[in-house]
Image (cartoon, rainbow, N blue to C red; front, side):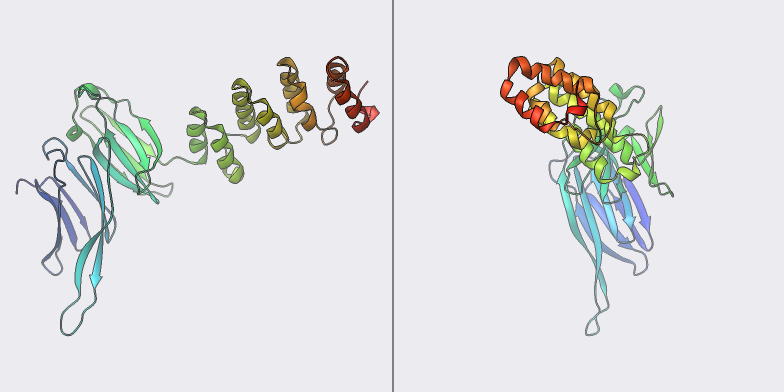
Amino acid sequence: EGPVGAVAWEGSLIAWSNDTGVKIFDVQTNQRITFIDRPKGSASADRAACHLHWESASLLLIGWADFVKIAQVRERPAREGVPAQRYVEIVAFFHTDFLVAGLAPMGDLLVLLAYVADDAGVAERPELRIVSRANDEVSSDALSMHGFERLQARDYHMASLASEQGAVLFIVSPRDMVVARARDLDDHVAWLADRRRFAEALEVAEARAGELKRHKLPDLGERYLGQLTEAGEFEKAAALCPRLLRDKAELWHKWADVFCRIHQHRVIVPFLPIRNPTLSPETYTQMLLHFLNADTDTLVRLLGEWPPAIYH
């Protein structure tokens, strides 16, 4: 069946791989528990090594070629003179669009070291991808490794170490070693913001604002407003101002001026605060002067709604 490619030991259970698949052996009972075959058509063992990781005493992670399997060791209770027996159930299985060069758990998620090649088969930078156990991508980061263009999937190795701050990953190539730690909430918000997914970044940040250390909600809000105004979504941006600018008078002055400069007085004026905070008289006066020339009906309405003391 070929040479042993990978070995992982947990308690009394040993898992190892060869050219045909993965076997799990119980040294306590001296019995083989199961054989998990390598999917047909997957890359050979000499091109893509098998990677094994015991997440717990009964949960084995398997990454090989372009697939991931999670095997759960269970036990049938003893009955009628038959001793209890262990067996294995595959609780998750999915294919990837890359070769798995390493894997490790991260809470409810998985960390996969992805070996990626272009259509011509030329290697690209390896990526550290965090996915759900249904293969939904949460984040990805390309790693700068020396000579990656000439490396194969089997040239990379990844190991994990549990710590008080969470999992620490060690990614090794022939010329480099990279140490990676679990991202915190700020890292996740930054990842979303870098991809201009400001609505999601804000939703995450607002839900767990107390955990943020580097990001501030007003800054995220302004970046989102900037994205919306650049896209011409003026009504949506204006409607979000009370939520994003809150009682920050300096931010209200700034964005009121932005809407005026892009000739969007009409969309911002319904949301302009007149108390908590009250803005400068010049801001309200500027709005009134605009409607004096552009829309006298709105001018009359505003004069009836706004206290005379807030404008000149």
